[in-house]
Image (cartoon, rainbow, N blue to C red; front, top):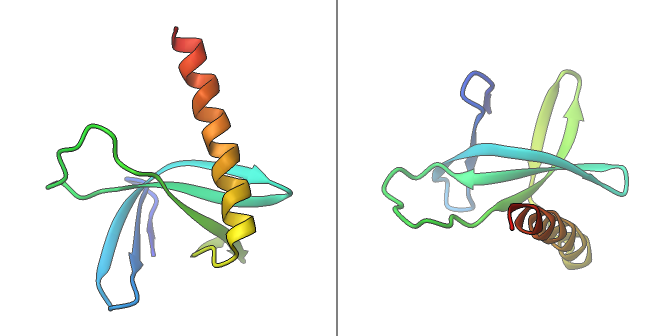
Length: 93
């Protein structure tokens, strides 16, 4: 389910718990879109939240957020995201 107004994404984990994420960005790797999500846990006071990467699949006008089970695919996307973060860090210096 997606709440476009606040860019909040609700997913359900393997145990049936609802987890809310904030949509940080959408990136494309090898012609496939991936969502970069930040946990929207208000109790989490850490300065650097870990980004969650999910594959995006279009279903009509809606997006479906899927976990990435393939390690090679996940590693490729994670490396791309890290390269983007490295570029941002260099620009800030």
